[in-house]
Image (cartoon, rainbow, N blue to C red; front, side, top):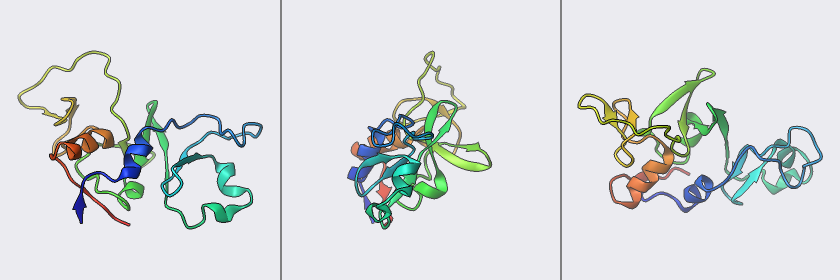
Amino acid sequence: MERKSPRWLGLLLSKKFFEVCDEHRDLRKSETNVYCIHCDQCLCSHCLAVPPPERHRHHKMIQIRRYIYQDVVQVQDLQKFVDCSKVQTYTTNGAKVVLLNSRKQSKPSKPSATAASCEICGRVISNPFRYCSICMQGVGAGRGRARFIGRG
């Protein structure tokens, strides 16, 4: 079914990841890198491992990764929930990933007659993609230019 971006997606995009988990700040490797769609929470590996594990057992979750100092999600993980086929992909550790939010631009990009660009922000991207990030696809959906296909 086609629809505008799901509510949880906007919540996900507003989160800060790779910060120390409040509940497990005294433990090693307690940076938040998992998003629970059901609870709208950023979780660390300890949140998922310590009792009560039942708290998130049947919840839908997305692991957030880093790629060149940016938060990314593997396409295979995100495709379970939304169609991200029109978002520019990158390859890291052999897996295709998409940016959650747009990259910071050090200098304005110059439009090129031959290069493709993000339909929302104009950032240079590769064909056949239309958006530079999930965030920009969400903006496009809000303007009626894009649709998210909900899955699950």
